[in-house]
Image (cartoon, rainbow, N blue to C red; front, side, top):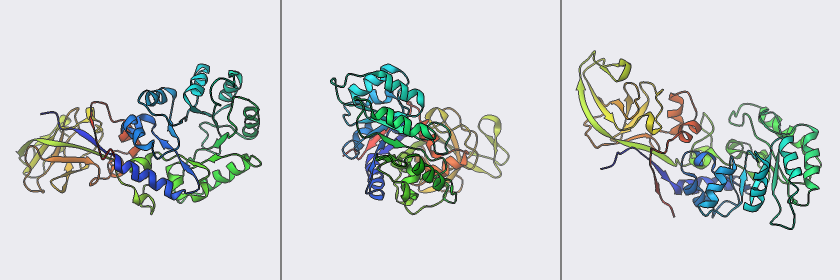
Length: 366
């Protein structure tokens, strides 16, 4: 019998969430963002699921793109952080990797590549404009100057996409996204070229930002980017269910403590279930007492510090619990966002930090 901790990944939910992104942006093309091992869900499996649906996939860097090519993925792949070395530009042209140029240095690197336009296909380039994120991106006249420079290169494809990234699209009561949209319109005025603005939050809540290409990320994996309910985000289906099983049950008396550091003290005679999952499986050590888990159709609460391989749960009030009973840490019954809020983080971090030790079990592959 193998250790029961595992992440169940529902690929039908991935398809549903992608199709929702496309439905909400009928005049745009939705990329399939599979960077960071598809947000911890397994980049190859998710890319193979999205390839029949998405015109382009997107990753952070060339290493992630090469992994997909080696797995048989043939669709274009956008490198969201572009090229880090000149040699990568040649590889990008040969492998049909699209390059994001996020600064003058990357624009110059492409301009100096001096590729032979008779060898292979043209290089597809995206330019990133800084509209207020102030992390990466071209500013002011750099956008139009870089566009003109790249447009003149014979080995660069005609349709240079200009993109930007939102800093606060998940804040529905903020006007900063509207300011960024206006800034982007000013930076690209007079340029007849495709544009890309919307991340997941932009797709779900900012229709004026849909542009020609959208970049759904966290929404593909069933997690809302918003801290509150939102009509479109509420249609997402969770993709990952992190689960394990009870491996021991014991009764302790009032005043006794549980786990490392004795951080939880029983206020009454209590039943404690030990579950085979811990921070070595991607369940954060910082999870506080009271964090919800789901056992036998009911919620129970974490009791005691998360250790590397195990957690302990107060199951006093949920009836009979036995060794072998299933435990959900997050998924359909315990929302990922709720768990993330318990530990003071966001859903993105919980899933992308899922270690390889936790096996992914894929369901609904076709």
